[in-house]
Image 1 (cartoon, one colour):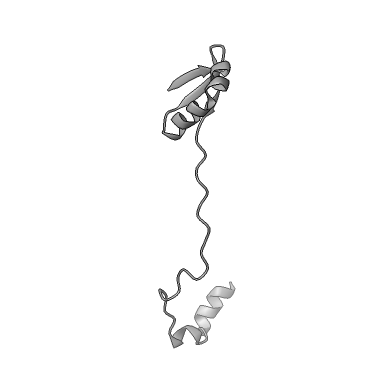
Image 2 (cartoon, rainbow, N blue to C red; image 1 turned 45 degrees about the vertical axis):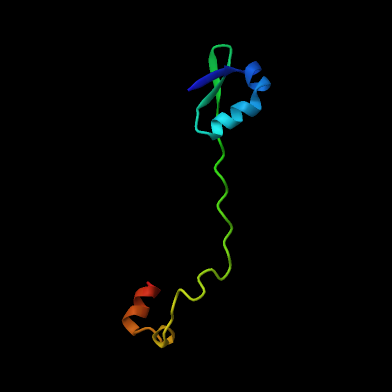
Length: 77
């Protein structure tokens, strides 16, 4: 863990951001009292691609047949 003052953090913010992204824990303090922790933001999840499952899933004719009465009743409960 690396602890720096607010003044040092303002002066060396770019370097501290690089260190935080590399995995080092950076704590910014006011005097000797810790105030905040500098941590990297997780990258956003990649966007979904429409049609990415094309050709990977198969549906046979039984998929389109009506459900049996007992199974249909179970879904309606």
